[in-house]
Amino acid sequence: MKILKFGGSSVGDAQRINKVINILLNDYINKKEKFAVVFSAFQGVTDKLIETAHLAVQRKLSYKDELDFLRTKHEDINHQLNNPNSQITDEKINELFDELAGILHGVFLVKELSPRILDFVVSFGEKLSCNIITAALKNRNVDCEYLDASKLIKTDDNFGNARVDFQKTNRNILNYFKKHKSLQVITGFISSADKNEITTLGRGGSDYTASIFGAALNAELIEIWTDVNGILTADPRKVKNAFTLNSVTYEEAMELSHFGAKVIYPPTMLPALQKKIKIVIRNTFNPSFKGTYILEKETSKNFMVKGISSIDDISLIRVQGGGMIGVSGIAARLFNVLARLGINIILITQASSEHSICFAISPKEGNIAKKSIEEEFRLEILDGKIGEVKLEENLSIIAVVGEKMRHTPGVAGTVFNALGTNKINIVAIAQGSSELNISLVINKNELSKALNILHKALLKK
Ligand code: ASP
Ligand code: MG
Image (cartoon, rainbow, N blue to C red; front, side, top):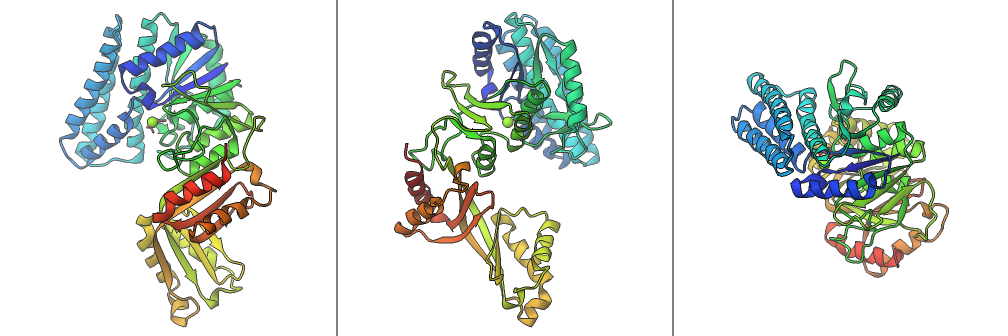
């Protein structure tokens, strides 16, 4: 059994959906492959649903225009796919949009949009796409069924980014597949909490859906079909010699996708990793390309460093002072302040002299973080135990990722040498003890140069 997943860009319009259906027919159905297939909402629909809900809560009547736009878009795609049975699908589309209109009218009236309601609103994207695609497949004589995954994937009630209860979910999926033998067309992204309230698995969560089903059903392979050839060594817009990797490990994939290579949603790796199920990234627009495999151990010819990615815009905050040396609790207080503000820390370094702690955050949170830290340490600053809290802006982080760097001396040397000889100044460095990732902070205006230099030094084909 294989689990396939096609993302929003693969189902952007009727023509693309037909392309997907042809892939399914030629490479899977005609070859009698056993599989199930997960779809995202049509391209742009989730964003549009969020936007519409926000207009409604702000009491802007234009939310109705957005809703009409979405209704027409789905009807058009449905008609272009030309189902003789589109009568039924039209009715279903209408039913879903009437329900959605009712909810949004409620949001408009009570001026309230809780995360719970927003999840319910966005769930319509996947319900619509999968209903329409199921009809289109039936129209091509495929024996298939629509499967609303929110009925099977059970989560907590952390709306917008719910945590999966695997015990219940796996049981539900196994039971369901025992009784349903035809091809299942599965809604990505959506799930439900205890009392059946709709939850979602986080933006981009359809990948995760595929992996949840794959793990529950002990699939031999999870195929994530998207609009690029696979995982690249770097962002091709920044590094002209970037190339597609044949394979990476689960950990490398996770590390690279955390650092901006948005090919796969990071949580997707966990269920697959636990059951050791391979994942492959494939390109819907280049289906003959073999893609990138994500697996436990590498067998192919491989590189010490697998990828170089970056976060283009970050700020650094440095807290330093003689009064910090040997004093416990400073770091705890510092990070507490940030946690209270909900600020995500991207990188931390502390020299062993303990004289300074420095960390990277998103630039838009720089000022508030600086101000709140100054308040927290007001007395220490007055006493001179802590000097000023410094905010440095216009910086970037480069992450050099590769599992084989572990226990291999010399990689860091190559990195620093390459940058040094090209006169690129390193502002801060961090390496996790997993040694999977070396992160460097540099000036933003040197980012592109630095990426190309490092790619050349570390990833010679
Ligand atoms: N439609 C959802 C989103 O746009 C889930 C997905 O595309 O994977 O985030
Ligand atoms: Mg998407």
